[in-house]
Image (cartoon, rainbow, N blue to C red):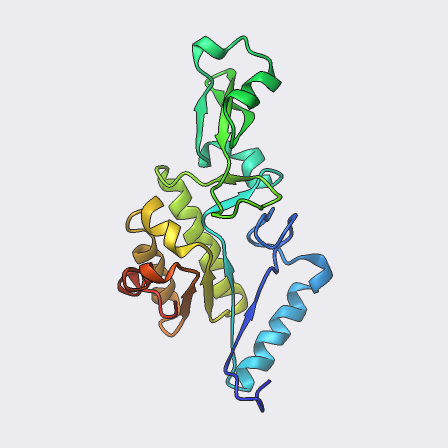
Amino acid sequence: IKDSGFNTLWLMGIYPGETPFSITDHQIIKPEFGTEAKLKHLIKTAHNLKIKIIIDLLPNHMSYNSKLFKKYPELFVYFVVPEADKDLPDEELSKKYPKHTLGFIGIGETRVRVMFKDADTTRGDCEWKMAQFDYRNREVWDYMYSVAKYWLEEFDIDGFRLDMGHSMLEMAEGFIEELSENIKHIKPEAIIDTEAHWQKGPELKKAGCDVI
């Protein structure tokens, strides 16, 4: 790789989940890809050869099967089933509210039926339904910063490929700017690459992304 002239490797889909983007944990390596020790060895070897390693950061959505969703469902977009629909059976609710998934939220001592918004992946052929992070909740911002910090400090990773950067501009105004500041504070030379519709390139550059 070094002799071919490359100076950066993007490790795609290292997280466990149904697909590389419907993931169940942001801080675990998919077992079939190896161990933490092997990844650290790879990164150290790459650094000795002046090669940087970046990985995915997926801030838009997460698997409904993730531990985070099951433990903290309030971090995802949902609405309480309206009073007029409270007696509808589950199947009827799902038909009435397409692109949503039925679930429950604990409000006080009561478990309430809610409809979680399925993430908009901009692909109509996406097989897996995923929960949409709710960036109106500041805890989601802090959670994503903690994920980036973990990989930077524990593995000396060189940056991230930001999934659906174009969507994040609209979904969470100011998030990419803050994320960039947090990452560069820990590692000033870190790379922030992003997926984007070409029209959003200038905005993403201004927000702190290095590569579009």
